[in-house]
Image 1 (cartoon, one colour):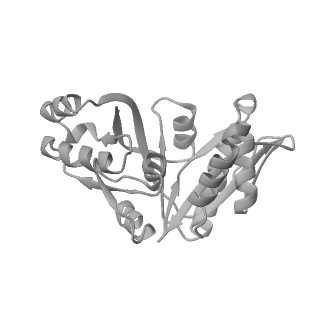
Image 2: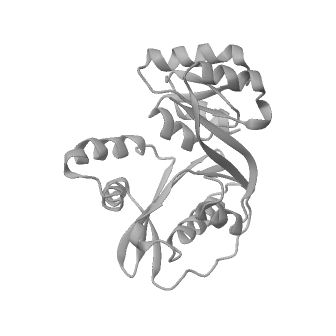
Length: 239
């Protein structure tokens, strides 16, 4: 269902072939900026096809491998192609229905915002330098123009310190990205933004939520506390 949503969400776009399965919209945006992922069998014969596609678009390869689908020949072939395992990611899912309101930590506020306020929030929280401001602003705005995007601002003691986003399509919510400024972490902002998105997804009629996090992080722990369960791991291969 995630792949079907991705295909419908990118009419007219060319789809890359990538090793893995159940690639979420979050991975799609991080990896290729508006060029969609497609899934193929995790087999060494597909590595050349994938590498050639990335090269044709002058894009650095990013291949996500589900470990239980890979064998030693595939991993050796990825290495021979100049790729190395540079990180790991975990995908979490939850069937959502009626959710009870949960208390929010004192001083924490999460509000849904429009595109312009979201752009300003992302730039403020990420601390983008002046030299990169225009490029970063354009990137954030273009990525989130569609009506399927739900955009959020997080604040602590009245000061903006975080952002989050969610993509809602056909009854499924992809909680695809959030960030809290370093000086405001461990204060419950990230957890509050996660709970707010789950509540809004439920209220909008969604019955499935999907999210990603690096293994063993605070993000993972927050997701599990909110009822999301581990679905599978992915290993990230890049040049």
